[in-house]
Structures are given as C-alpha cells and as structure tokens.
Image 1 (tube, rainbow, N blue to C red):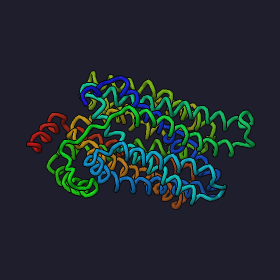
Image 2: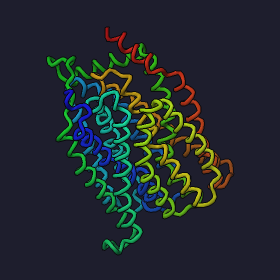
Image 3: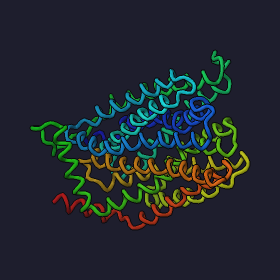
Length: 435
C-alpha cells in the first residue's frame, strides 16, 4: 500500500476522475442546464419562479445525497468497497445525464428529475473519490495532490465545455439544425466523457484495505453499526465537528455561486452568450489557480489559504449586486476562477489530515453530507429572497440583485467558526480516541 502513496501514475489516475466528472459540474450544473431549464424546459414561466424551481431541484438532490453519504461511507469502509460504490454512482450520473438528450420542450418536471438523479450520481461518487485520497497521497503531499485533482477538473471541464459552446454558437458547423439540438447533444458528450475518463482510476488506483473491518458480518450491517458509532464518536472529536460546521456554512456560499451564477446573470439582463464566455474564463483560470493554491497550502498552510479565498468570496457576493456591464461579469468570473478551486482543494486536504485514515470514506461521507446540506440552503436562499422581494413589489432585476447579497453572511459566519479550528488539536483528539 505504501508503494502507491505519492506514486505519479496513481496520483494522475486518481486525479483524472476530477477531469472526468467536472464536465457534469461545468456543462450541466453551471452552464447549459440552468440556461436550458429557463429558456427551453420552463419556456414562458416567470423568471423568479423558474429560479425557484431550479433551486428546488438542486436542493432535493442535495438532501438525498446528504442523507445517504455518511451511511454509504461507513458501508464502504467496512467492506473495502469504495471503488464499487464510486462506479455505481458515476454510472448513475452518466446515464441520467445522457437521458436529458431526450427531454422535450416544456417538460421541466422530467428535466428536473433527471437532473436530480444525475446530481445524486455526481455527488455520491465524490464521497468515495474524495476518500481515496488518503490511499494516494501522504500527508506532506496532500495539499498539492488535492489541488492537482481540482486543477485537472477545471481544465477537463473547460475543454469539453469550450467544445460544447462552439457547438451551440455554430450549430451548422456540426450538422445541427439549431442551438437547441446542439445543447441537447452536449448532454450526451458529458456522459461519454465522464465514462471514458473514469477508467484509469478504476484500473490503477488500489483501494487501501481496512484492517479493522469485521469480515464475519455483512458490509451492510457493519456499515450501519459503524455509522452509528462514528456519529457518537464525532461528538467527542470537537475540533473535527467544529470544522464541519464552519465548512457547512462557507462552502454553501461557494456552491450557491457556482450553481446559480448563470441563472442570476439571466435574471438581471445579461445575454446567455456573455454568461457562457464568463464560465469559460472561470474554468481556464481555475486550472492554474487551483494548483497554485496547493503550493500556497504547502508554504503558508491550508488554513491561511482558505481564509484568502473566503475574503475574496465575501467581497464578490457584495460586488455582484451592483454589476451593470458585461465586462464586470467577466472580471467577476476571472476572480472566482482564482479562488474557487483553491478553497475546495484546501478544504478537502485539510480535512483529510485531521481524520482517522482507516475511516476515510465514512468521515468523508460526513464531510460531503454537510457540504450537500449547505447546498440545500444556498439556492433556496437566493430563490426565496428573490421571490419575497418580487412579492413586495420590486422589479425582477432589483429583487435578483438583493437576493445575491444574502450569500455574504455565510462566508462571514463560516470564516469566524473556522478561526477556532486547530489542526494539531484535532489530531490529538483522534489519537486519544484511538487509545
């Protein structure tokens, strides 16, 4: 097992899964699905109403993943089945994503259902993908390896998204009869891309065994027992518990901005072409920036790197309410690209350093659980505040601008709680519990 740690082939194979599934995050979550949902599947609906439906779809998928993640992680740890669960969820996401190709105009309920199931596949797979990092990288290399994965994700997602944008802007070049056909075909390309680039991880990344697993009982039964045990255990690991609360809050703001940015831009009057260009900027800036944040984490510490990103996000959420020109949206996209991958990568590596290695899938189940519960609140917060302002008589543009500022409070409270998280104290608590 030690031969796999810090091995270049293993690291690259593991990181390629980020390259694979980031196509869903980019083309589906952030890009074409919000646009298509608003302009094609919800054609004729009120702007704030369709925003609410989109937020609801995001939230339902997140709730399901949040409820399942820690139990699935416990089961995977007991039976050494991380890769099997990863494969199941990945191909659930792949099939549902491809299914969007056949959803007709105006059929927003079916589009929402497939999107929810696809998001479950995407997020559920990430529970087990994230947990495999403890068998790929040593603690010394954890920040840079985590950042390398996110960096490849930005690059891979950006490359396919750029091709998909070209298809949509010039459908006749690819033999499509219009933009709608090109967008629908892009959903197929995401599924195929996701499937192909998942193969190296399945072939070349070995799953670390759990020597404490009880082979005399089923993984399912043992997993449920271990979940209940760890749920009680975390109450004694106060520093890890505090980190999860802080992460719950600040990653809410990050996920909300990622998932709702395009919808917000449409609501305040930007053209879809401008928003797509902004997303491409975010992806390609995010590739080197995420890797750079990995080195920042090694040099000054992951905690300080996370704080740099939190301060930037706070000011962005305020600035976003006052944007008037598309050049401002482009600048916003570039700045988001500079910090988005960094805060995700350093949060993952920071958490991986303070948890018990032999329970990595289970603990990352809790990590992903709180992250997905945060994504429940964020989209609903923006959608609900927007509808409330609209019902009070404000114009759609003004209501949308007010709603986006509500995200800032999540960065403030999350950052304040994170201040009290101490890495060495967390490790000491884990050692004391294991004795």
